[in-house]
Image (tube, one colour):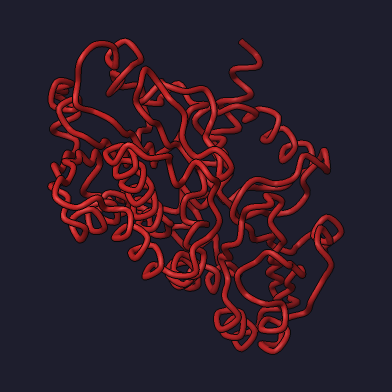
Length: 357
């Protein structure tokens, strides 16, 4: 048997600077027998030279399409719209198993090409617990943007984030900006839904560090929903992972009339799913236009928040993922990869049944 090929593709999304594989991790993989191919990228937070120095084979962007069939293609966000058929095994966040927009077209590309998808979101132990996620930094960044927006509204000045976002050099730089934006004296209250998860913990940490009083909700509180309490906070941070239909936390009608709520940051950001608990918007907001108005409330719903802190996010995520990449040659014997494959097969079966009905 030849070497397992792991192929790190360049991200198709122009704003994606994170990487799921650091040069140090690539070196470890090479040392245990992998061949690691890295597509050159000018936007990735890590320089191409660092991967080359680690012993990786460098390739041009998009060369994965012609990679050997047994290569595993590693990325983070969505694939480009072409090719029409996908013949490789891909590892990335596909957002296609809850019938999101375009899910059937994507899965059809895999089925037609006899490829497979190992969706990072479904890398779980047998108890259902996820083992790899960007959640902490997503919650951290989503809460930070909400706090910046609230301070600007409180001070009656133009929104700083409305000027457009670019990645922060470090978490310290972000902290300094928040301190500068604080108007002094008055501090907001915030409600974090899904506070017990990675995203919720990240959101809570940065809010509390900046003097915000945080109410923490979990499954119990969302099962017995008290919308008046939601509306009685200045800031709402939604970090809940929702995998089935539940009553909406808020709708546009709930935002009519008098209430305290001023800023919402939907870290979970799943507008294309029927399971979306905040059906207040139809598509994610962007780095260029981070917030929209919904009945007077500023709504932030950016779907790649950790990319705004690409260094910290990449370091944590790549460290969590590396042990599972090492297990790829025996993935049929690894519970996490088996669960990942089962999720793909289940989604394909569901699509086929839907088309037949």
